[in-house]
Image 1: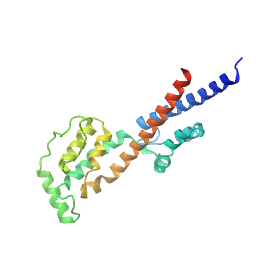
Image 2: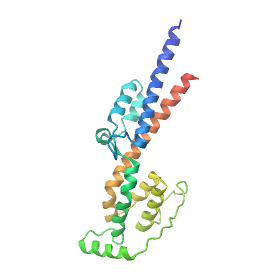
Image 3: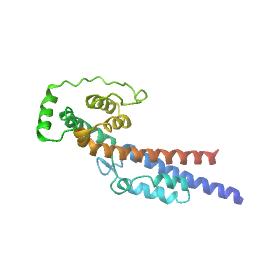
Image 4: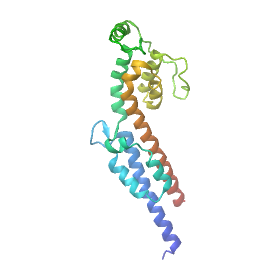
Length: 207
């Protein structure tokens, strides 16, 4: 026969274990997608489940509430989708890299022609995400080369950091990709936080 304290403990443990499982599902969705909508990862169902279980936990609720409404409504682009689109985005940025702050048609045409004559070195300045602490001194060409290197290593955060430093026409051309990538990273950060919190609580009650 369980006393009141044991019953309360088991009930609390059940809540955290259930929440932990929902958080695992959220992390899985953010990392690999839900398998239904191709390049878009739908989060509405799993977020509703997390909201339902976590109503009594203010900390969890505050994290879930940081997820942008756009992600809740239409989902986020998967990393594989972003990686596939990245090469075409970089290609367009390279075409206008020589005139980053000029939007007139003549400048765009000249830049496109010159970019085809310019050989882009394939050697990045940084070979690891840990060493990549600053973009100081990096021009458009350097940023694009570095971003390509990191995307080849599936380091989305570092690649976005490079692309976010672009200016002028390259930044305009890359803006949609940057915003979609940042949205995925925001959701991924929130998913990681709720996962860690729920896991620590569940393990604490088990121990």
